[in-house]
Image (tube, rainbow, N blue to C red; front, side, top):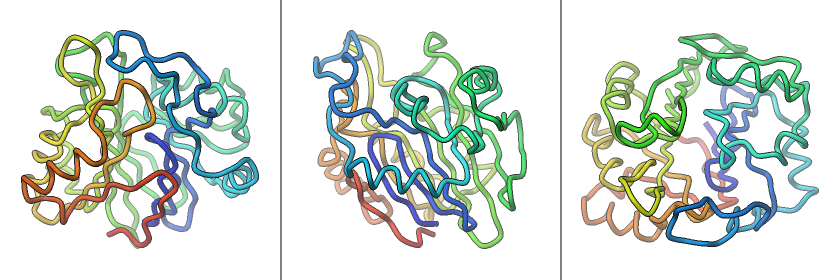
Amino acid sequence: MDFLHIRHATSLITYQGLKILIDPVLAPKGHVPPIAMTPCPNRNPTVELPFGDEALAKHLSTLDLILVTHRHQDHYDNVAKETLPKHIPVLCQPQDEAAFISDGFATVLPVSDTLNFKGIQVSKTEGQHGLGRKDLGPVSGFVLKADSEPLAYFAGDTVWCPEVENALLEHRPHVVVVNAGGAGFLTGTPITMTHEDIGHIMKIDPHTRVIAVHMEAINHCVQSRQELEQRAREHEYLHRLLIPKDGQELINIH
């Protein structure tokens, strides 16, 4: 699996020879107001995309599939809705099927359990967008499996919880992509993973590699790449953790 990290949770992977765009947020810096009731007042996204319009158009022209874990604006924004080619299939959680059809996509593939797409087995997983929270709506993760590729688990917007532990034990992924950043509000506990959550993942399987994204691009994410790296070093799992910068490509992840 090749993994191009674009920004926040937006990534472009090459898997089983297919180009798959994950959680597309394509707006320029400062395009929308900040998420309310959070420590940082900056408009979102807080940083620009790592490449220009021509490079973005080139990437979009090669797509085989779009995977959206859920429809929050920091995972699928209005610019993506307007820009993405509508003939590209969209894979999503069942609750979002009607909205993507309304957006004009010709092929929408809701995953309630498992489906197959051109040689890739896709399984949906559960999570909690903040422990015990119901107000942020349903969120899902997805596991990709193919004969020539590592088993890859995209956990989605979740914290460490029984659902994530069950997914790890059931699927035994080689690679786990987590939405880190410790996103949250002025009150309450984090709604995405912190370094402690990632540490729990590391304990399940000593061989699992973790890719941490979802940092330094949206105003409610408070844990930086530097802090996560420092914490991972202190807890002795940095050698199994990848923290890509915006625009960085990771080749042949396994």
